[in-house]
Amino acid sequence: MIVKIRFPQGRRLQQQRGTNRAVSAAFGALLVPASLMAYSLGFWRLASDMGLAGQFDITGAFSHWQVWIGLGVMLHAGSIILNRYGRGGDLELPQVLAALPGRRGQDSGELEPFSTSGEN
Image (cartoon, rainbow, N blue to C red; front, side, top):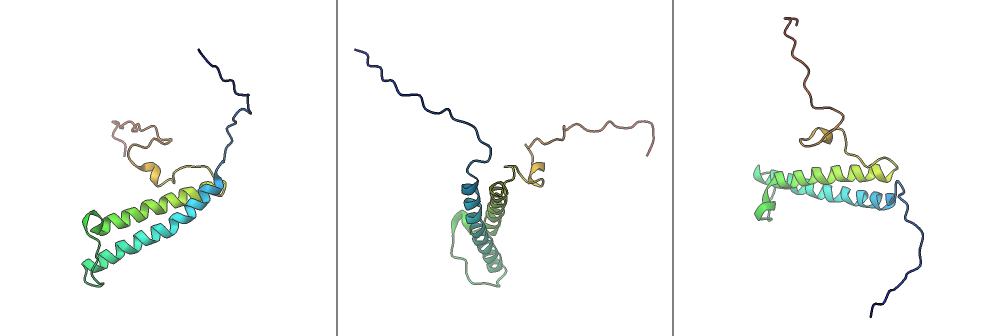
């Protein structure tokens, strides 16, 4: 026996630009204190290495100041992107991050032809 269940047709889904802007702004605002915490832990570890602060008690992979400051930079960049989108802008990377390897921007990647005529 085959039973077929028929569901009524609902509204069709529509793609709307700018949905979840409030959620994006909220997460962007929460990432700012998280990045500040990562920066402070990184500078504490750096000051501990120089003998200017007390002992840094975190061990393992997170005992290096480079990890904490790098994490702070990534969280800060994420908060900037999310806050920009939450305020009504487009969800896009800043121009500084567009130059990273593997990113394709407006540049075609071709080099200018080399001039052989002896002009400087």
